[in-house]
Length: 172
Length: 172
DNA sequence: ACCTGAACACCGTTCAAGT
DNA sequence: ACCTGAACACCGTTCAAGT
Image (cartoon, rainbow over all chains, first blue to last red; front, side):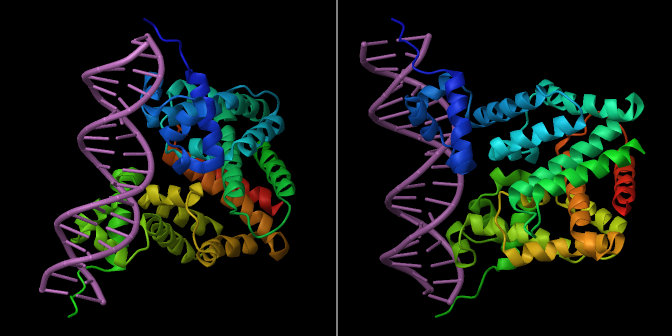
């Protein structure tokens, strides 16, 4: 006698993403997720392998967002920053390297910036240009999210200044 | 009747730093630290407030190393990278923002790069220059440690290339 | 004074028993 | 088929009792 499904992987991941942002990684317990989706904790294991697996799914959801960006280097960089601001905990989770995601998802996430960098520096220098911009952008966002820029000043201005200088430097 | 002290804060932090590098944050249990220093887990609470407190001490040990750097921007950046390579888990812990350290230790850690940036860009532009270089360097190192640069190529070369271009861009 | 065994609360996970 | 209560292992932490 089948029982109707009372939740779904999507609902679980969605609940987990919200909990991560509000309560942090420590607050992301299977119990908290279960309450949120309306089942008991053991039922979650019908949909996800483990808590670590759930965390991986959260990371891959953020990487998916990063895969769907378009435009020149300024547009892509701004979009990445917007995604980071929307879900800071998830973004830092992805960038911290604490989570091993599927290679394919990871590669897909770096496509847009690689494409924008190629348009800027030409195909021969696309890789090194993309690396330089990506390093700077993720570093900037990371410090921004951590309060590592607590010495005052306008962050939007610092972002625009740094990106402009970087683009000029890459053009050579 | 006093009992001789069988361990110390230094021994505990030192053991914890080693465990963090070999077994990761999840492997850093109070039990594992206790075994390493030769006491039972409850005894650790005579020296550190909690596991989170111990993790903070680990982070501050890395920040202390970052405070004692000297030289121009190339020397300081290279030294930061060397520290990151020596203790990657601790470095990523510090940069991930998962740990709140004392403000003073944090500020001291950014001194050397600020000084080097001032020498490069002049006092008026020191802050923005330091931010740009720091963002790039921490981003680069973070991606390097996470395997985020898995598209091939020589990383030392990419580092030198990026830093050189960045310095040129900052000089204006 | 510091150290320890025992105990407690909390969490991830498993599983037999329900429907 | 999916859901659940009960149970287990593990971990952080407290504390009374030892020396």
